[in-house]
Length: 91
Image 1: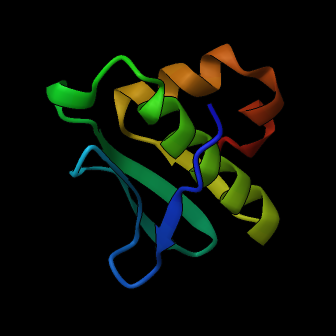
Image 2: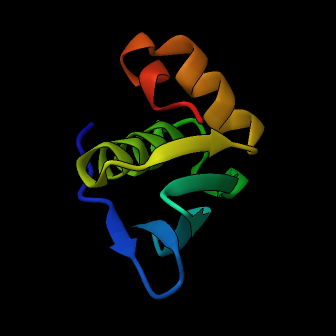
């Protein structure tokens, strides 16, 4: 499924609302490095690929802006490990 993930730059997070439930990927940005700190998808909407879509949006944004990525979040680290095309972004 292709979702139009929202990038909330003021809150430094990527967001998606599904069935009235908010899912997020939080990050910090310093010196051109995006540190992904948390991916949160509530259980009520889990298993729908939302975390993957949030992570993909974050990584594509990092690439577009020339940022490196430090995945502190275990989900984001595993996602990058499974998707070779993003491994060049690792800080």
